[in-house]
Length: 299
Ligand SMILES: Nc1ncnc2c1ncn2[C@@H]1O[C@H](COP(=O)(O)OP(=O)(O)OP(=O)(O)O)[C@@H](O)[C@H]1O
Image 1 (tube, protein in one colour):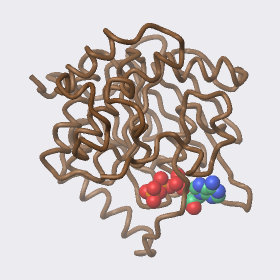
Image 2: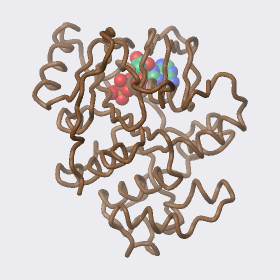
Image 3: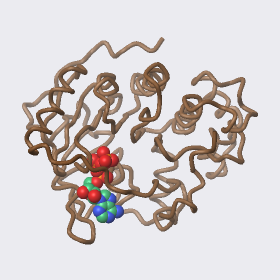
């Protein structure tokens, strides 16, 4: 049911390591020379170009602090690059005001986050339906179908706290897919899960790509990366390498090589607040964890 893609063809065109080449005229996701400098002088992204066609799953890897989450946030329209362009389905995000950007995120983009999970006070069904409810659209049938697709049809009336961690993450996947988005962004979606449960979540993302969606997943896990069509390795905010049809051992070796190149610098995870609810116009102003309705619910 959750088979890997049969065709794992190499990208055409002899491009350098900074590009994933689109097969169609308009890539589902297109980043061109994206820079992101934070106040204080940290350059998190230093000219990243990445084109991802529809139906492809890309894993983004790299050492802690290499810019993976910043890349995801800029690509998803949750953060604005200092320079460079991001296009989703041909729409340039920089040209959009807050309201159209919010609509685009809500209607054409899905999000799965490790630490930013479900609304504890809502039922599982309401959580899965959330992007549709916020858009004022009828939600029941589609949310039930999305829950059925992740194997949780019988838990629709439960609260998130009544589910296991893996089940909660499957609800998050259902929520990400309920709008039938063009692009799904997943930031370490399996980081807190055991290997078997993680495989279930990865299979769902894999199936989304096989159904024609574009999936961009940040991960530290070489095994998770092996579910993708392509692995893109960041180092100090740049694309350092890429691997088509990655195998976990090759990904592990590449990560080791990146670590060696950086002279075994201490692997310190930067402090970053949880990503705010991506559907609200003022979401980027709500950086404090307490303001986020997607807090991980107590178990
Ligand atoms: N809001 C911020 N303000 C200032 N610097 C930031 C901010 N967010 C991230 N950074 C810095 O930008 C760089 C890239 O951070 P980012 O979170 O994108 O890395 P990452 O590869 O996702 O790391 P990890 O794997 O640990 O999550 C780091 O040096 C980090 O400290």
